[in-house]
Image (cartoon, rainbow, N blue to C red; front, top):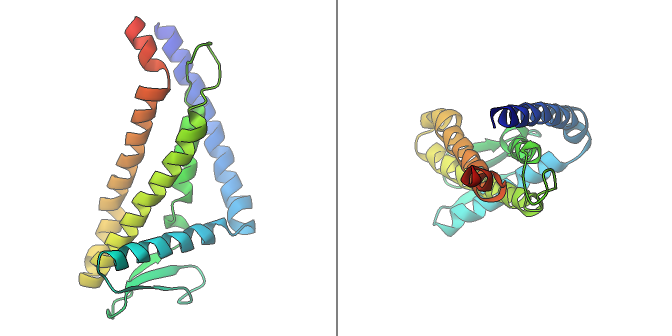
Length: 189
């Protein structure tokens, strides 16, 4: 059993590192400079966050032209600058990280190395859920920025990173427990 797990772990880590390296280079050398996906995700994130803020009673606005690199969500009546959404914060890298781990994670279905079809729906669902967590993050950060701008950096850099990565780990945990097939192996042994 130990050699089986060791081999699976080595295969998983090797594949995850390879796929993440491919994702990283693809993102920085092809996707980011040559496509508009980052801007589209940032804009979508800003618009949905703004709608959420309006829905819960805040008078917020999205500024598209403050800089070319960022979209800003801020409160209409506030003199404070609001929350900037740029390429590093729009969640695309998290989508890649989430997907790479699930793609690389070995699954056991009926045959020893067959493809687990649950990945075909769980990865897109996970990406949508991560995006929604990011929407809530931007909305809450916009509220924080309107009341206490000094607290924005701590909450951006610490609080919401812990929340977001914890959510991604929860999704991975759910995947492993419910859909990877490893629970069935553990019960048999």
